[in-house]
Amino acid sequence: MKRFIVGIIVLTTMACQQNKIGYVDNVKLMDGYQEKIDVEAKFKIKVDALTKKRDSMSQAFQLELQEFQAKAQKMSQKSAQEEYALLQQRGQFVGQQLQQEEQQLQQTSQTEMDSLVSKVKKEIKAYGKANGFTYILGGGDGGAVLYGEDAQNLTDAVLKILNDKYKK
Image 1 (cartoon, one colour):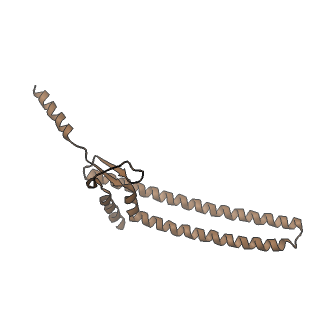
Image 2: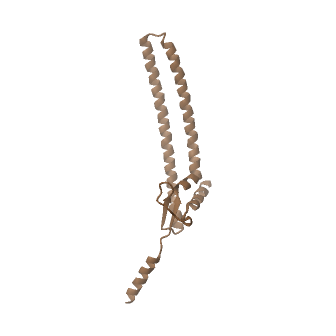
Image 3: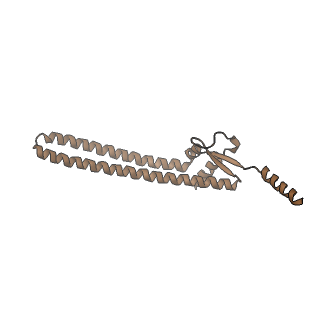
């Protein structure tokens, strides 16, 4: 009988324990994370430089093409076709180089963003463990939280920790 009562007390105690659940607004968290802001700014500068380079090379190629067209009228058809083919090959080569640079920049950017997301997830996990949370859900656009009490919103606390660590 004693075991039965102890078992009921243990089951009742376990049933009464509530899971501590919180959530973070993923969009607000990432938008306010200073390291992410800095990474985006760094890549924007690189993208702008690549765009200027592409525009400059495109203008130079257009001028060269116009010069060729004026010169081609005075050349034999065979010579004009050969020179045009060379000009076209060079244009394709330059286009491919620019495309490779753009792809490499996108890959590097994606790698850094993936690293940031991983860092944020680790910090959320550490925060949850340190503060006794059973679950921390992701909210915001595309998140799993459709409603949550403001008291359970951990976004600002986690964001402060991330930005403080980044400042160091």
